[in-house]
Amino acid sequence: MRLRANAKINLSLDVLGTRPDGYHEVRMVMQMTGMYDRLTLTPVKGREGIHLSVNLPYIPTGDSNLVVKAAKLLMERKGVTDGLDVELEKFIPVAAGLAGGSSDAAQTMIGVNRIFRLGYTRKELMELGKEIGADVPYCILQGTALSEGIGEVLTRLPGMPPCHILLCKPNINVSTKDVYQSFDALKTVRHPDVDGQIEALKCGDLAGIADPARMSNVLELVTADRYPVVRAIEQDMKRAGALQAVMSGSGPTVFGIFDDREKAEACRERLKKTRPSARTFLTWPQSKYGGKS
Image (cartoon, rainbow, N blue to C red):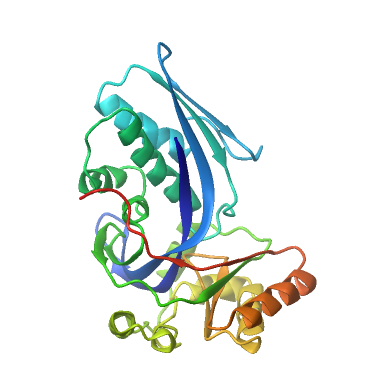
């Protein structure tokens, strides 16, 4: 079975506080994009265990990989005794704020459920996905959604209007845990107008969705201050005609929203020349919802 694991961006990201269990309460609008990793799942009769191969040598293939964790979770719960081979082709940058690992895990769960006919509904898979990671339930749902709690409380939203999404991942790595811990020490935070962005989505108003007061990420106060290249890329995109450019997740990937493909293409070519160590991708909003209810 072949599956696509799509990357996500945060159209807005707000942190409301820290919970007693140490997790952060968030409120954010999640959007799936057309950029994806490829997964091939093959059941193996008469052989136990999960074997993962990846096209990139620095990605672990053992129990620490979210794909292996996801497959093992479902197979052990249902007592599956056959084995599973998984081939993962990574295109989504690692540790980039794009939920690549979570999306890989989500699609693995969907695939294992189908291959072995385990009978889980999408809602049940989403509930199980919380055991793998906070973004996994959303990556099972897909599309456009309001994400609350620690990221697991999801409300479907209307999809984005047609547009072009330019992604640029600078050659730096960011620790999500470290970013959140540093965010806790901040005294002043300007919160995005998430409700206003939701209303703009309902109206199909791309300019309203991309309004800087709405399309904003509070974690930039940490990541962009440490790595000025984040704000520099945002400025590059805005000067090239992006309606808005902002960081996704804890970073460091920046995305720009364009209503004109030629401007987006020109910006991509310019970034490839001026920032050769960065990785750039041009994609679109993916509004498909996955699985059955």
